[in-house]
Length: 286
Image (cartoon, rainbow, N blue to C red):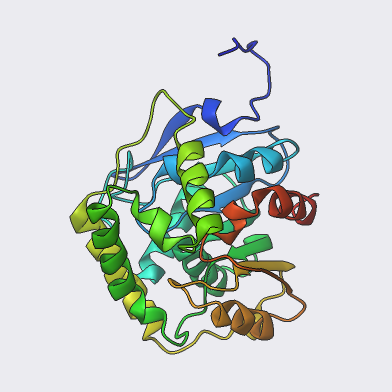
């Protein structure tokens, strides 16, 4: 590992320093990289995820030119506090974290549950977000979104029986291409070898799943009020958050862009990182 000068800009997520910030009695863990200054890109992570679950092939290209911040939600990884049992509460926690860092305007890159949190955040604080990336996610009240609980438990069982990572089943198709992409993704998540985050516990996972279930069974939010330039992406065979919900988001958010990748599932942006990362970086460019 190459030593970095004191003033060198870190653009590799594997090398991004872990930091903490206190908000009242809660301590949030986060990492940051890329050139500082201007509006940061805050990454909102998926179900059961910690700081170590972001694909460096997505983060690093964006961090070449943008200040990137990832963070652990309350009660997850190195963040203290209790895991929120609603998506709305998770959005409130995200807001207090962002404001504690002193930012009045951000861009958001979100995946899966993170996209649900991002939507609830914008509903409450429409002026906070300038640009929005929603991947592998769906709207509040989206059809069959509440079925994610059964799908998740089933794939955790399948992964346990085959001694695999559940994300290989949840995020990728089970054909030869999907299996290869899944194993490559899991390998990339291990590129950071020091200062790794604590994995989420079973109780926290169950709490997050119930929050998503409630989100799926709730009355829809009015996304027609969203004025942010929005990029939406998914695979054409998402078993966790049905692909049709990405199309639903596209219809509801005026002027949004939609990218659907073929022969891929929930983790399509990771499977097609070589194609998607440049698209996302260009979309988020100042």
